[in-house]
Image 1 (tube, rainbow, N blue to C red):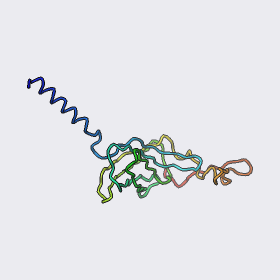
Image 2: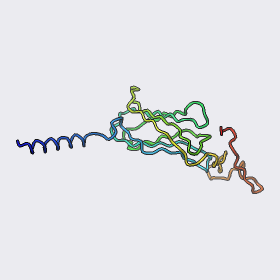
Image 3: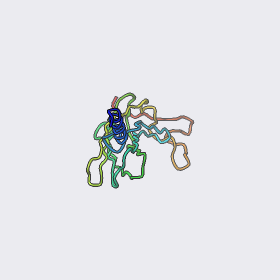
Length: 169
């Protein structure tokens, strides 16, 4: 075998091995999105995190997400079962209060298998482009047919969107 053939064989073997490796060796998912969702209709704000599956996920895996509480206090924790056939995973927090514009809020996600072994840990931050004060304090509509909320839209034609005074400045 000539030196040229040996170098060519080595190059091909190296490329084949590189093609087998995942880009993210830290776990079976990749962070693809993180944002705050403001729903004006029901006066709520939530974190939404999306992950893309890049490797097999064992049966019985759970995502444990800890979201920093913008109102202060303990983190908001969500446990969500992950199904092996999912290609995309969406994690959403409970309703939030006191989200502030341009402030980074921390999020930590652990994927744990059925035996409680940690498969992956993801730490990230989420910033909002809006301050939660743009939302009304009560839902704009009530009931299944989206009836205007009488606590907001008064009979005299005025509207009281309220203001959350309990949030730290």
